[in-house]
Amino acid sequence: MFRALASVLLCCFFLKASFWVHFSYGDLTTCSGIVPMTERGDKISITDFGGVGDGQTLNTIAFRKAIYRIQDLRRRGDTLLFVPSGVYLTDSFNLTSHMTLYLARGAVIKATQDTSNWPLIAPLPSYGRGRERPGGRYMSFIHGDGLEDVVITGENGTIDGQGDIWWNMWRQRTLQFTRPSLVEFVNSRGIVISNVIFRNSPFWNIHPVYCSDVVIRYVTILAPPDSPNTDGIDPDSSSNVCIEDSFISTGDDLVAVKSGWDEYGIAYGRPSSYITVRRVTGSTPFAGVAVGSETSGGVENVLAENINLYNSGVGVHIKTNIGRGGVIKNITVSELFMENVRTGIKVAGDTGDHPDNNFNSNALPYVKDLTLKNIWGVNVQRAGWMHGIENATFTGICLSNVTLQGTTGPRPPSWNCNAIRGAAIEVSPRPCAELTSVEQSGSCVSHS
Image (tube, rainbow, N blue to C red):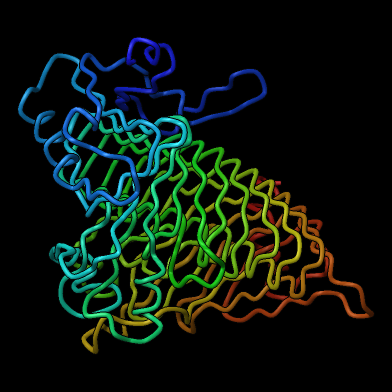
């Protein structure tokens, strides 16, 4: 069975090069070309450990036994865990280093809806508490902590969080702790996620936090538009993250770069940096590309390009708040097309709640060097809303070659700006006065 798969396996990825090295294969630019591919030396099947894909049998013991075997053997080349076609119901489980979780076509790993035995783990130190509730948080459905060289891939098999029971607890305000993400890696490196469908996450879908060298490519992420907080991909206090060639349609931001929450994120002090988002298509009632609102460790050197959005709330949303602290800088969004969007571009210094009342109201975030270029929108209700913070003006904002057409009617979409400073070149409709700064126009020309 596995010999036939050998030629198609995407295995044993490990990132060794400096991150922003981009390769071009023909006309396709990719940041994933720095990742070598090697076949795993050992291959096992979940059925070897009693796995049954009938959609009813609980396979928790089978997954834990299989992964324990991978940990125990440590064979040369390490191990691929094969999940054949079928529906495998299971509780949450941990992965281990030097392994590939491979989902065949038609394979579904499905989360149990029995929440009573769901494991609790400590809050992230950069958050100080669960994101939704004080105290700990439920462990992600598929989890990894302190790992390296881990691959989740296959033939577009599905990881299904069956999140509706969790969404209803959120709506009914009966949650005791913060809901689990679908997949989370903590303090890990050399992570590759590709060619898998993620569906119905209880909370955030893919959450690499305190990680480096992460490639997420050729994934599909799906959740109903009214599913609460089902962000697609949230790089969080992580560096060297490559997100490419994916379709995301969820109930919250498609991609949101984060770095900790108020005084806890400031104290932890780990930024998100060198994040690339490329060739992502999707729909959301919230933002297509977002930074924040949890940005207390800082966010820098983010590139998002070739993004296609439709039926969405906001095209690009940079969001932070008083008490966040942190520096958001060197953010570039280019080649973005949007259709049927409420607000094209939003930059806000008053967004997001606080973990407690101990945040420092003098910890002001600083936003600078934000470049938005080659952006086209049709049926956009409002062109832009950019409000910084008094005494912490957002500076270095550059809009270049931006056209946002409104819905049918006599009034074009408008801009609303305050406490920002920047420049605009070839922007329609005409931008607000704060974006016509003569002293900043030179830097904008260099990005046009």
